[in-house]
Image 1 (cartoon, rainbow, N blue to C red):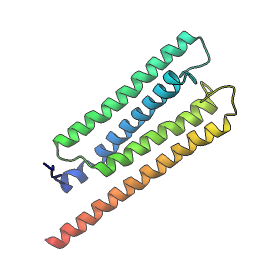
Image 2: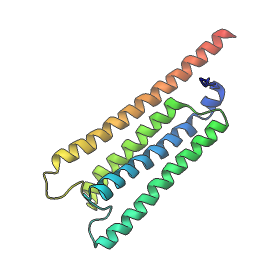
Image 3: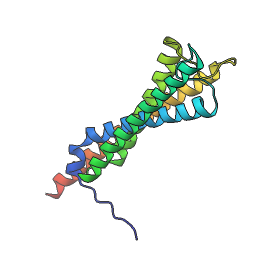
Image 4: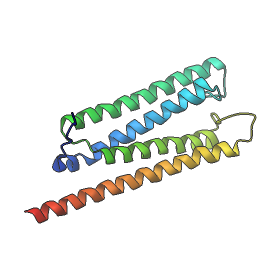
Length: 167
């Protein structure tokens, strides 16, 4: 049995910022979780803080992991509230998700890796290709998110025009 999606434009446009922030929080937490799980735990390429002992590195990874889950759960809490209000907006959420994930990744790749130097993606290899892929994919996510957000706002304006012509 197919589920019919009910679109409530007045509610959706009323909560556009909440949809955006739900996506940003979820995207930020999700990308941070992937970073911590893949590069820290599974591949052992680095810890969140590599300038001290292994024990300090593990504690910093634990705090980073907790941060990523708080952001992810916070974003999902907002999504649940939006569904309750019949105001969840997929395109705005996905735009926020890409924007939040890309912003986290670009911050990590530039501020944490290069400015603060608390860790690198990898050690004892030519880091340039890793930096290009890491930061390049972050920029692509940011632009993709901004494009989706702009497209969602355009859809909203088009729906308002249709609503005005129908009355």
